[in-house]
Image (tube, rainbow, N blue to C red; front, top):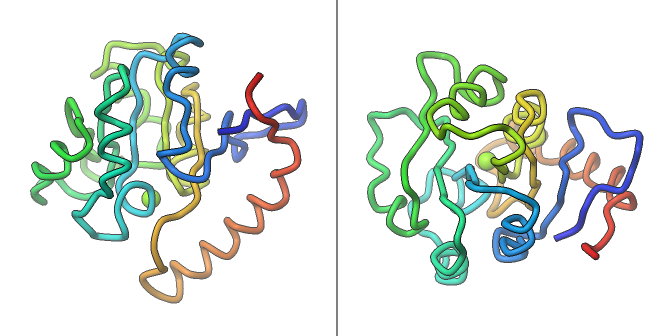
Length: 178
Ligand SMILES: [Mg+2]
């Protein structure tokens, strides 16, 4: 995990970057006052639409001390039970009507549900728009991870292309933790 050291960062700049969830330093997050993490599903811990979490990711989340909440735009009607167990999650925050990620309202509502301040919650995700931009605007701590799995279609692969360009552009400003 690396930290943003640039003074010229904006809403598309995560506070931290990591190669994957396994690369996140949860002990460090705990030390800086984070109490809970909200974690995206598709492209972050499972391949798009998938239900299988890797053993390493399961173990890392189980062994750390922060509360874990799933933050997904998958509708409430879809069964996520198995994923909650695999991620040692305390709950799932679904979109309400059309208001899901990336809306700041979704993240502000999430903070109310968790009864925590933005600086106590870290959002972990693979998308700069859904996961980083929205959470930054609501004052959460943000962690970008590299996308897991292949693109589902041409639009998805185009977005991934733009996102990987953004990752490259900002990469040099991210330095290892002290
Ligand atoms: Mg995602």
